[in-house]
Picture (cartoon, each protein chain N blue to C red):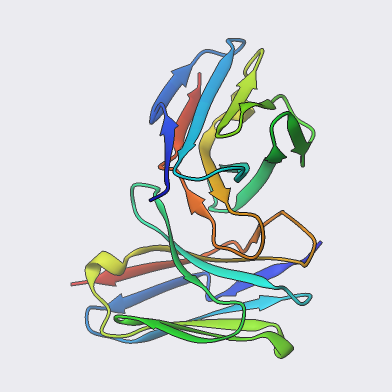
Length: 109
Length: 112
């Protein structure tokens, strides 16, 4: 199966700072997603982004499928951005979404 | 719009007791359904997935089983819980094809 590596594993920011989270895949995927898990455990789908760039408010994501990586950008971070960010993907023909181990983000006031 | 319901939110069960967690989806037909477990340390592990009624694929040999008695209902069960079954259990659904996944709010299970 595919392997998903996320970096950095932990990130601490001051409110207002920008950050970039990275996700690397061991093989090509055709369903790449970014999730945010809040402190209460709820997993929220941020982006479905198999390729290209998408933006949603202060968040944006870019996937370069040919190079098997994706980036999540957080601008002007807020304390509510804290939590764990996961990327996940699956190979064509598979129904099994494989997750990375996540990046734990802490935004301090 | 589609919604996913998962209950209970928290559960404390003694070792050796049975388990039944339920997940239902509304507003869609023939969804793909999934059970994930998240142990301490953050990683999400796929336990079971189903592409249709009565069709269950198991990913990890364990003390758990899953069933899909109705199109939009997915149940996670155990006959006898172990301490190692403690964790955060998440149900998810997706439409067939390259679509995003939507997760339920999770069940935090503690086996004592």
